[in-house]
Length: 114
Length: 116
Image 1 (cartoon, rainbow over the protein chains, first blue to last red):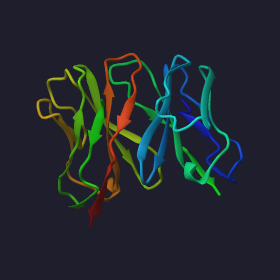
Image 2: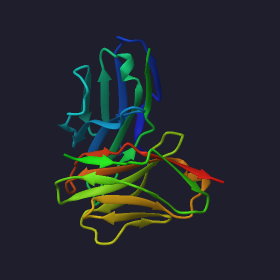
Image 3: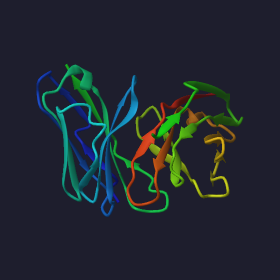
C-alpha cells in the first residue's frame, strides 16, 4: 500500500491567498483526520471524518478553515484567506476500525504564509 | 474532557541505557486507547505502541514497553537499550471511546536526546 499521500509537500503563499491542502487516505480506512503542528501549540486535531462524514470540527480555528471529504479516497483542507499565523505543518492521517485504530500519517504539508 | 500531559520537554539518555518518558491522561470514559508515536527530525510520525484500557498486561513492542498504571492514569513509555537513532520527539496520545472511529488527541511531546 502506498500509505497516506498528501500534497503539496511544501506551500509558500502570500497573506490573503487561498490555500488548498490535499490528502489521499489508505484504501479501506474508515476515518480521516487533519492535524496542525506548530512549536507553540503542538499537534492539534482540526477535524475528523468517519466514512466521509465530518464528525467533529471543533478544532477548526476559524471560519477561514474548511474541510471536505467528497469520497473515501480524497479530502481537502482549505484556508481562505490565509494569514501568517496559519504557517504550520498540516498532517493528514487515516485509520481503520480495528482493535487499536492506530493512525497512519502522511508526510505532512509545510505551509508558509508570508 | 480528554487531556494528555507530558511534563518532560526534553530528556537525555546515554546510549545503551534505558529511559522512561512520562505520560498522564485524563478521561471519564471507561474504554479508551493509549498510544506512543515517534517523530524523528525528518518529520514523519511513526506508531510505536498501543495499550487498551481493558488490557491487563502492559504492551511491549521490541525495545518499547508501556508502563500502564490505570488507577494513576499514567502510560509511561520505556525504551530499553537506547540507540542513537532513538533521538527524536515522542508523543503520547489517547483515543477516547471504543473502536469505531473516535478522535485521537496528542500530548505536547518529549524530545529525547541519546548521547554516544
